[in-house]
View (cartoon, rainbow, N blue to C red):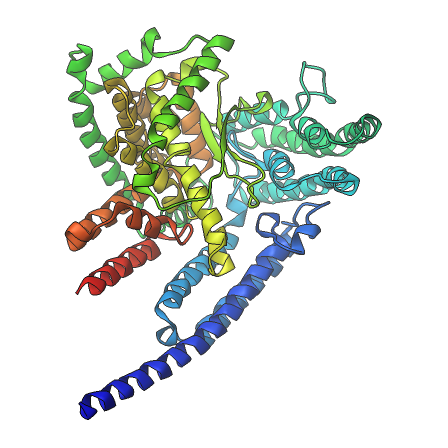
Length: 600
């Protein structure tokens, strides 16, 4: 007995020594995590916290070439010192994962700097003009008169912010990095739309910035509201409008330099840039050819699944013919009127209410944060996606917001209502946002709370559409058809994105392919193709991320058998924020090993 006690004490002392070493190394790593977070907070408003939030109260961040070079040097020094001073083998198991993710993050950031001039300031779907509005709406709360004046000063600063963007675009033009004529024409349309509304013109509604400001100062007395609103109107006319107009004028000049080639292969070093975008968004080393082939396989699989539904609709013919038939059937759309829009919103809310009953089966207890189902604001309709989600504020005072573009109801088939809502809200991005709130209460390195790896983020959204099917979310065969058409769209993106940017497809060929493999009308197809042209690689991440989550779930089920718990699995997938796919795999393998060890 004495022999065993001695052995136990020896093992205990060894473990204690190892824990002390790990604790010391963890503490060293924490200093690097903090230093990096401070760099981000000082330079980027979206990452600011604590006292740094005050820095961005009355100004936007500085993304001038000079400042970005300075930030790049800081991040490069942090990476070099981290690799030199931190011994991964000495870290605790949790910190070994943090180490991997931190290196992923820094490598991605440093490479992003390298390709900074290849990212356009405005596109048909997003741009700096909208980021100005978004930042004011989401991050600037008004509790008192000082906050209101800071808001106005920030609008003044938008002219400087837009001027920096103009300099970047001028640099791109000199390097021969020019968008195609078709994209520039659409971009000009979007830019002109962003100057609609009072005080720029009287079209029956306030501009988004003025509308947001008035809502936020509604608790002030009437005279103060009137005075502050009048001041903001002058600032919008004197600063925001001229700043944006200068970019509009530059885009008009760029049109004369543009050609008709839409893929980035036509840019200087375009192939290298596209290879980087694929790695950046998918967090894998898959080549354009591999992704293209995967897309063709997935399209073929989905054609077969959709063909099994065709008898329910008494249709005989090919899958592309069936898709076109369904897209043209008037019974599958609400009327393009106020009543039709209200009916669409109503059915969306009912779909979510039905799936909400399954949340306790699929997820651990989460914060009770409300969400709203809203129409996309009028001034954003021409540039907005069909649907998107905006996370609630960190203090939960602002609910999650699900925006639907109701401009043209013929772009919104009824059969896609449920899958779209499940992707954007529950169990999709709203659940992700709730885990983000939950994660803020955990002792996680701050840099992990602001990661935005597309494959994990959007892969979860697409996985959610499938998850809803498994738990009774789809009410009819029609809605199940809608789920499959949306999945087919994500598969087709793998083909079209790589086709445009790596295989030198022209825009016409891309449009024709997507028309054959989607249920969308031609104008919606063109809008999608414009998106893939403007954001190369991004659209490939959805299917790749979804497939990885399903693959990891199959592995967990196979290894754990009856010990597998779907709630635990989802907590592993979402419980450490948005991570790269290789780190996500490490997390799941760690979970499987720990669970198995526990039951031995």
